[in-house]
Length: 576
Ligand code: LR7
Ligand code: MN
Image 1 (cartoon, helix red, strand yellow):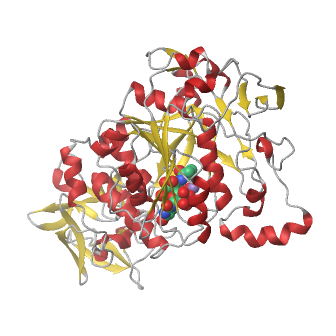
Image 2 (cartoon, protein in one colour; image 1 turned 180 degrees about the vertical axis):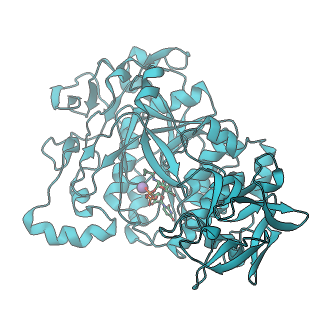
Image 3 (tube, protein in one colour; image 1 turned 60 degrees about the horizontal axis):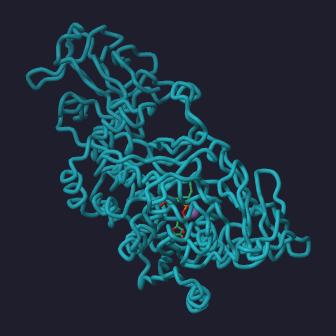
């Protein structure tokens, strides 16, 4: 038995060994002298190989990459080896009816063995990679609410069967106050056969963020590994994650998240070189590393990939470091935004986030949440995001609010809760600025601080706006004159230092800027007819800024698409 030997790994039952690779899986031989049991506490007895005996001597070795199960695997079983499964004709109504239990094909999931084999999707070059034999141990934490029975079990089995026992301290199941009966006594009974599995039951629904904190508080391993409760950890998934944390305790590492198809439950591999990013307004997404970057850094497909943000659900983090970082903001509710929070916190406060291509975990991506939100779903998520933006985004939070979240600016309508502790934490940890993060971690994000700035040129008078001695008027354009410098902000304010252009009857004056005040907002460049106009926002009668030809004054007039006295241009535009 040569673990980690080239592409093939060994899947071991109590009766058979299979060798698997990307395309085919076949039986190799019966393990006569090896009586393997995945659930034993004693790895040395288990494998009796030089690799395991060498552990704790700090040397490097190849990844064991075992897949151990206590029953022979049925090669004919539905969904075996990650193959697509099919619903028999006569079962289609039942399968459709049960979809809503998990927002994936629950009927099929229930037919598929909870310990099925899946294809080893690691890139070729992973067979070259080595790990230390004194890696830290980990506690695997699954938080769940009303998870489907068979997928929860499959998640747990995949961890027990594919993690080297000496590295797996425990599996903690945090039940976030599920309502389903089978998740109570039946789950206790089932899990009692595994000495490493512990169940924690939350008395009230906490949401996944506080549930993870509860799991972490109970964990005794040196590293915390968080997983969603509908995953399948692939062969050799754990060691490469722990290796990175071992090398640097401030590395927070994610496996490649592969896809367990929600319709046929097949295990599907994903493209290489994908990294986690965000787009405005703090929406998580994937993007491929640019070819040029890969070439320049001579990257192999097994090399760790630096990620501006993590997807959120699947990662390992040094336990001490997790608490040094103040864990999660406990003010985040139910679901959403916590991945942004922890990602910004990690990067800005001295850590790193990586995707480790030699570690692969399948996840069922679902079209909808199969559980209830105690409050409105949209409001919950946007409130979470606003907390993150307020604490971590500095002046860039305006970009966030400008992407459909203006309504959150009025704190009398949306109470985002107290942020004092989070802000103090950021100061205590001496975290860097969001600008530093953008420059160093995510430079390819287009994030200009304002939409436009420079002089505001009036096309009709060919003069520029000037704010001097408390008066707004016109003058000959002069870029070197600071009094003529304005910016057009993300929240559509016309700003000069801390003062903003505001309507006052049929004229305009300067008022202290306030993002929460809608009357300070001007539409510029977003309407096809009035492209160069500065139109008051939110008026049924379109009102535009107009230069007075002879007096250097400014008026508010009904908008007129051809009047050049109503046309204004900034020196620089940063967005469309
Ligand atoms: O109130 C809740 N309590 C919980 O315990 C709500 C959820 N949960 C559990 C739930 O049962 C599940 O195990 O928390 C886990 C995550 O919830 P999902 O599976 O509904 O989330 P998701 O997969 O749709 O969403 C992703 O983004 C979330 C944002 O809050 C979390 O970070 C999820 O962990 C995260 N999942 C992943 O990163 C997997 C890959 C998805 C991608 C991209
Ligand atoms: Mn999920």
